[in-house]
Length: 543
View 1 (cartoon, one colour):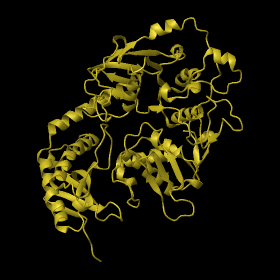
View 2 (cartoon, helix red, strand yellow):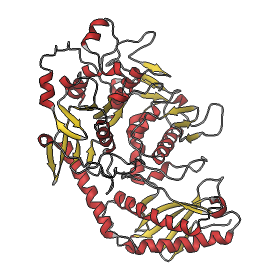
View 3 (cartoon, helix red, strand yellow):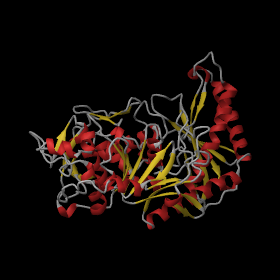
View 4 (tube, one colour):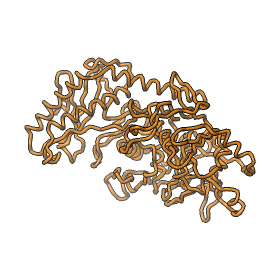
């Protein structure tokens, strides 16, 4: 038996080589492992921040390597190339940069893939054994501990703000000086944009940072066209994750369970109780509603009910992405339509907060229906926010109060029958797993439309969701499973043991990069599967 050591060393730096996929032996994956002591690192520092910082610094080194070998007259396969994941501006745990302890020695690890030049072994050896180690040494020499400490301090302050919000009755915060509008590439602040300034009467100070606090409850953001309403909601949506220095939204901090909710016409829905919003449906059951092609109103109702099941405590809703008949019904239409099955969101939004603690931030520009049920109303006046709560309430003083509707039951979770939960297409002995750039994910017989999921940050996060679902599907032991606890356990394992534990090199077409997702998005993908059977659990099984 011939033993091939997958690790080669250059001084005290290790290079671990493995196949990216069995069909691409000319494109290996290499994990560079640099000892902490070479970089002057402290074992007690935040590993996610360290790994994120190192990856962003390393991307510049990869650019230098490729400039040295670039030949525009040849393809990468002919010429050779180095590849590295380019992160967005959010801070996440990834498989491409992480910390590992080997024989009690700590290492910073960075993963790359390399396209070896076709039929040019000499160049391949030069790329791997000379050029790459030389660039790694430059990376070590230029590693900026002062810059790293600045990144660590920023994240520490972001965490402190998040904890303050939890204990002081707030669901979001926008720091003064934030740049909310994005540039054309959507990857940074818009040059020349007006910095955010909080209205004085809703301004709070959190550990020396002043800005607008959004209290739990119901908040309406209103204003004219192009006034910055949707931009503010988009910023709040992005605030579920910490952002890096220079993003402009570093101090936009939002409840990490928040979800942006919209109408999603055409999505698949399986066995969900939408009676809080849809009282009855012809030839169907609103209590156990299923369809392969939902309408705008039924899809938005299902999206809200599912979000509550995930543990979401903040809904972010833009009327431009919503079904009008789901959101509101004015007095004239109530008088005209005698048998309306839809209970509009205006009539449930307060109950959502008072009964189950789910707050809402709503972008509303075309109807005053929400003004009377809101706790806080922010007017965007040419991108400048103003608190107009009292003025809006005065306008509602003479409104005829709506008839109080009975409170409803807000269910917590469903379980699935695992008979059709598989990465194997029916009758096939080969697994199928594909993440399309067109907004679809394919697992076994499922083709899942994921275009309506607004909180997924990257293709790498989508890939991680696909691999995680596949792992749960192939490891199923019971015929009925509670998805929430299964996925929570899988994510905890990825947090502890590394995001890469779900990866499989069996599937072609995947890049090697993975980013840790939230449980919300994993469950959202599964809830859009058309072949699964969802079952309402017994009361004793509720979480």
